[in-house]
Image (cartoon, rainbow, N blue to C red):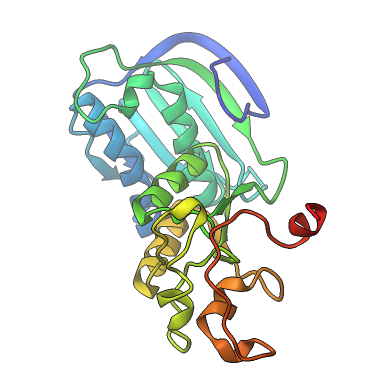
Length: 271
């Protein structure tokens, strides 16, 4: 079995290899905008790394050579998929667009690692023949990114989303507020970001996401079949908020911004 992460539910090797070539095409089985979009997301890295045109065509393409993306209702689990590789064709099948997207991510793992290159690589572009099927073992598959302590740029978050998608993750928990910083603009209470977003751990410059930037992150995540779970840490860990609005404090006095690492129970344990 190739080094696939996560390992598929079943994998059956076959004789031979499929060669992706200059004349190869990508076929989608129906004129569906979402399927066309995910086919484009597969084609983009392949075009960069191979230099091939890889046109996307609508139709069965029976007997043709290339990559076929089509819905298959016999796979009942919504995120399940099947990949079949023969010397002439790679067939990606799933009952939903999410499953088809995961099939494309598995195919990218099956190709040579040079598929990550940003310029054409002069190597044999081949995939071992096989049949594999997979479906998720857990409905929630994800990670948490703590942007409250250190703000990460929109481009960094988007790159993380691409990597999560490659490994079939479907959730990114964004920790948007804590004592150390407030990281999203709330237009009704702008000082939460403008003042509470100034601080970060170890003197980092801080900052925050504008509403437009946050929408960009959410939209990019949706394109990769990932849900964004925002965390606004209330009622605890509120120093960034208390420092922004004095009237939130019982004595009406705003505390200083906080750049340390001890919050909540960790500060009690140190006493």
